[in-house]
Length: 255
Image (cartoon, rainbow, N blue to C red; front, side, top):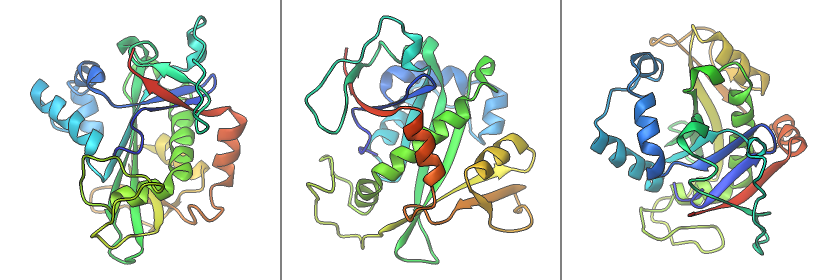
């Protein structure tokens, strides 16, 4: 999606999310060459050209939103976000400075699709991957999920508008909409599919109010968990965590 183009999201001393750009592909390709990560993410190995093509699709496809998870800004002692006059952000950071390969930790994604049971609702499937083994178990998944969900909540109108708008080279926002030919959907329900063996991930999502949609796993051995009431007061705990931990949106600019 284009909604996060040029936007980095910081959770003070916990995590930094940046848009997935071409500069990240080499490191990402290294991660996804690991057979274990391929198995855990149900992914097939890609060639370098295919990986770059995939990155471009993530940047523009209206049904995919992704960020690269990076180490927090506070781990760069000399860095002070540059001030900006834009009222929607509190500063800016430079690509290639805050998101070098050694600072990349993993990624967090949302796949959007129509809800066949409700023509006003869109389903947003969340996925999170901590690719760097030494970074697992240190709270990055929890912090990244808090940050990502709060970003989605903050920009839900623009996300739904972009999803409901035909593909266009023009960035669409609620303040400058392009007339949609697809019937707009004005509700978003977040969910995740989690392997029954991945008890840590299940516990993480359940701690934020995600609930199982059925008492048994699916045919593929997965739990489907949903966050009901999204945008209707159902994520107050996540909002409190994000605000309390210094949630901040920054301009993400070329070095």
